Length: 188
Image (cartoon, rainbow, N blue to C red; front, side, top):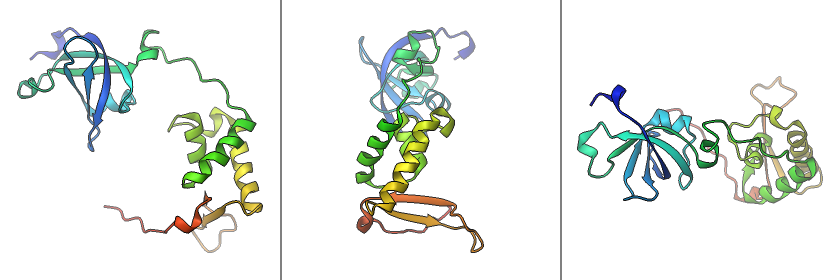
């Protein structure tokens, strides 16, 4: 199949599965519910999430052996609300206040082991969020974690890369320290 001459069709679809290798699958909404194969590069650049609705530009699947299950292949995808604007990113989310960040920190701390950055990314609903995206919220989270630790409301685990370090390289906080067990990371 000559993919350069193939015309794309835009379909609203939901992502149903993401494989360990990063490719994904979806189902077109409406019509006959055609299966859609989403290559790794497209799934990654489109921030595919299972259960989320996307506008997908599709072509006939060039792998003819897969036509019975996934007759379509996605070549571009965007969240449904962003696509309506013509592939322009959705408007910025409203700024999170320091008070909201502190309240969120108190709530999420009951659910596991967290770093300041992990809580911030959860708060912003963006795994690529950086401190610069909302400096006030990031600082409020750090201040709240330190306040909770000083008030004996949570435990803190620290890591020093060398014995001469006076400041820790990383800090983790949890309200359920009895359920935490250290483990060794192994590169494979």
